[in-house]
Length: 113
Image (cartoon, rainbow, N blue to C red):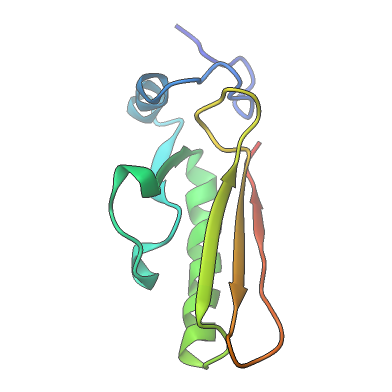
């Protein structure tokens, strides 16, 4: 049973069960919104399901964030998913960083679908 004709249209994936089926097919992978490398918990409320290429993009961004933390440029991170309609698969992930004592921010958005 196909849930989405276009591999980048997840409108019909409106439940965790449907997302898990796409994980089993290799079309989605679970990732942590707030990455474990930065202290994010492995918990259902921190887990979203995205296409595999999104995980690769997030890995690159996390590498940059780790470097910024090590350099003392950021000390705060917020990661928020954005959804289209009732989809269980986020359409974007907004990451917002800041430092309590320094100006500047690094605010990447991962475009998913």
